[in-house]
Length: 124
Image (cartoon, rainbow, N blue to C red; front, side, top):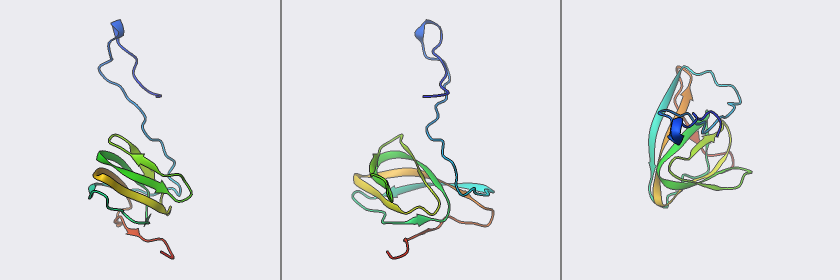
């Protein structure tokens, strides 16, 4: 992947490397005064349900796994170390814990007087 440090002399790994895991355009542009980070756990086999966030959400899976799907896209399984982006206003069809459950970190860019909100899509 781009932006990784080269190997050191003798083929050994350099003492530091940087790897881009996710590079997403935030659209619409979000005025951000703070970022809230939450550790979220979903019990084994529990679906999060169809939902929409009031702002973009970025995250990384710590443990377990989840079936993740944005409306109109194919589902994928997120596992430890995987990162994801839920665009503002997008319908998230699935963020369903597998039989092992899932724990992830969610990063919420927020305006100064804003809190993260989740709601069902219209007609749900």
